[in-house]
Image (tube, rainbow, N blue to C red; front, side):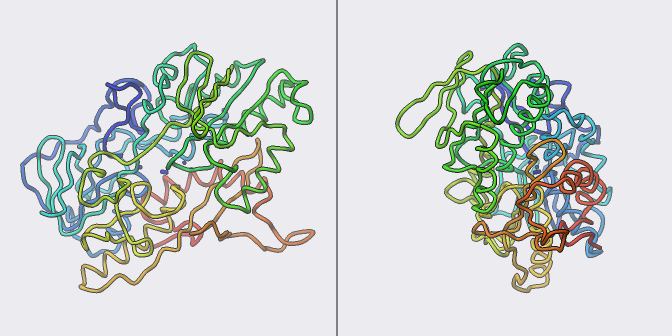
Amino acid sequence: MSSSLVTKSALTAATRAAPRAALAVPLSRRGFASVAPVTGTSRSHRIVVVGGGAAGLSISHQLLRTGKFSPEEIAVIDPAQYHHYQPGWTLVGGGLKDPLSLRRDEASLIDPKLKFYNQAVSQLSPETDSVTLANGDKIGYEHLVVVPGIEITYDKIKGLPEALADPSAPVSTIYGAHTVSKVFPTIEKLKRGQAIFTQPAGVIKCAGAPQKAMWLALDHWKRAGLYNPSNPSSGAIQIAFATALPAMFGVPKYSARLEELRKERGVEGLFAHDLVEVNGNKAVFAKGEEKVTREFDLLHVVPKMGPYAFVKNSAVADAAGFVDVNQATTQSNKFKNVWSAGDASSLPTSKTAAAITAEAPVLVGNLLRSLEGKEPALEYDGYTSCPLVTEYGKVMLAEFKYAGVPKETFGGLPIVGGALDQGTPRRAFYHLKKDFFPWVYFNAMVKGTWGGPKGWKF
C-alpha cells in the first residue's frame, strides 16, 4: 500500500477525509500541522513539489541532498497534519501493528531547508508556471513535480460510507487511517457465517493489498478453529474473494501461485464481480450487465480510487485524469518543466511505495539534467513490488516491471535443494514486510536515502 495527498477523500458525500487524516477525528476535516502559515499572494521557487507523501518526500529530499539548491529553493505543498506508512495498514488489519506506530507528524519529516506550505492545492496552471493554494496564494516555479497520490472515493460505492461509519456494521477497510482500526476487531468478532473480501475495478493503491487482508483473516480463523481449509463447508466460517479482475493478480507468475493457494484453502472465487452497493447485510456486485447480490456476515471493502480533481481538471492530465508523463523518463508529455511519479502519474505500473524507490531517482536525475539544459537520459523500467502476506509468518515477494515481467531481487539465489523462488511464500520475506520496510521507510526512504533493491543512496 503507497504510499501519498493534497486534498481530502470522502466518507460521506459532504465530508472529505484523505488516508493521512487524523486518526482521532475520523469523520471530520483533518487538522493542520503546527507550522507558521506562509502568507503572501506571490512566492516563487526553483522546484515546487505538490504532495508530501512517499513520492513527494523522497523526491524533494533527494533533490536537496544533491547540494545544488539553496534553502527554500525547493518547496513542498501538502495539507496533511500526519504522514502514515500506508503499506503497514495491512499489518494493522491483521492485528500485527498499532496504527499510531506507523504515523508521524508531517512537518517533522520535512527538512527545514525545504519550504513547507501546509495547504491544499486548488489549481495547477502549467501555462503560467504557477500553483494556486486553497487560501488563494499563488506559487511560481521553474519546475513542477506533481506527486499528490490518488483520492479514495468511498461514496462511489453506495452505502459504503454509512457502513464504515457504523461501529456495529461488520464492514471495514484497511484503506484509510480513520477506518483501519476497525478491521481486526471485526475479524475477531466473527464466529460464524460468510466473509467476503472485495477488490474494485480501476486503479487502486497496491493491487495485492485486498487479498492480503483476506489471507491474514483466514489464518486467524483457522488458528481459532473456525475455518477448515480442506473442507470449508464443515467450518463455522466461509470465505469468498470478490474481485472485478478476471484473475487473482495482474502478473501471471504470481497470479498462478495465488490461484493455487485459493483452491488449496477453499476460498470461493467471485471473479469479474465489482462491488457497487452495500445494503445492510447484502453486497451488490456488477457482473457485466447483471447485478449479483450476496449476503455477508463480514465484508472487507476496497473503495474506488482516482485522481484528485485539481490534477484531473488541469492541463497536465491525460484523458483518465492522471499526470501524463513519458513512461521511461517521468517527464510530462505536454510541459517540459513538469514531472510526476507515484500514484498520481500515468506510469503504467502497480502503484506502490516500492515503485517510488525506482521512479524517484530517475525523476530526480532527469530533472537535474533539464536544469542544465540537457535532455532526459535516465529510464524507469516499471519496477514495482508487492509483498503478498499469505498467512501469519509468510510473504510471497512479488517483484516485477512493465508488462508484468518478474524482476526479482533474490530470485535464483542458491538455497538448500535448489534456487530461491520468490513465488513461494517465505518467513524471511515476512520479516522484510513486517519489520524492515516500516523501519527503512521512516529512517531512509522519506529522507531520500533509500533506493529499494539498490540499497542506500547518497
